[in-house]
Length: 328
Ligand SMILES: O=C(O)CCC(=O)C(=O)O
Ligand SMILES: [Fe+2]
Image 1 (tube, protein in one colour):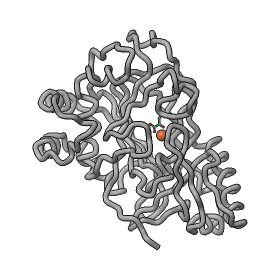
Image 2: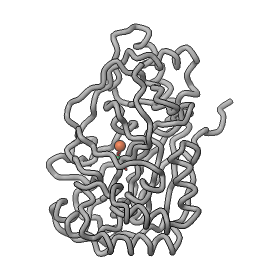
Image 3: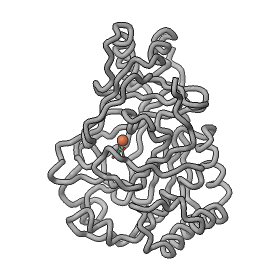
Image 4: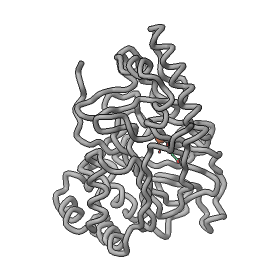
């Protein structure tokens, strides 16, 4: 018999107090370049966040950062920068918005005790990224494309993968789902021998669409780092090895992903003012966290459903808690 999901998902509301706090901090830091500078190094920002956010928000994000919170946290009612400008050009849109979503993402990072991580190998090298389709890349399965995204752990092909991902929705689109499936739920379909083989440093992991070609060699798929465990898992064929036993383990892993997908996928249909924060395939001592994906094709024409002449637009932060790489 199939057991219940082992993935913990929690949904909370941002209190009116935290909501207004984000607006106030955004006003105070409206001149700060959140994309090219490390807000985490601004002690006045860090103090403001640590001293003012409500206790429930501090506790849940603090627990997640230590690896003892939920795998996925959904936060409703965070402020959305309104009005969002209707420029065609994404860079113009970003320049002309207030800084509320940037402050929300940066604050979550501070409360988790993490660092914002630049995405060096992507086309967006700043501390915060835009998930927004661009006409010329619409056929990509990526943050700038409009196609669905197969399940993945973000940046599993770089050694120093992010520990958490935070997404904030500025503009939503009906029937576009951010999907999540738990690492434990996937591994539940594998035997011990396969998991042990996935722990061996015999794999090469390749980058995905929307990233410069890059690969991580001689890595484990279930990778022990300090007291954390990172699952470098892709649904797509991006995990390779010449080792026959390793190849068998990848086949088994694929089957396990398929099984987990048919029983355990959850999703959020992001709406303006909703954030989702999840462990990027990271667990403390034991495998945990989630893979994420996206179903549905994003529309490149204005989104009338939200009464806003805009396409779906998320902002994202890659958050890294202090783990050091295991050099074994
Ligand atoms: O568009 C989404 O819902 C998810 C995008 C995604 O995979 C990401 O931001 O890493
Ligand atoms: Fe992603």
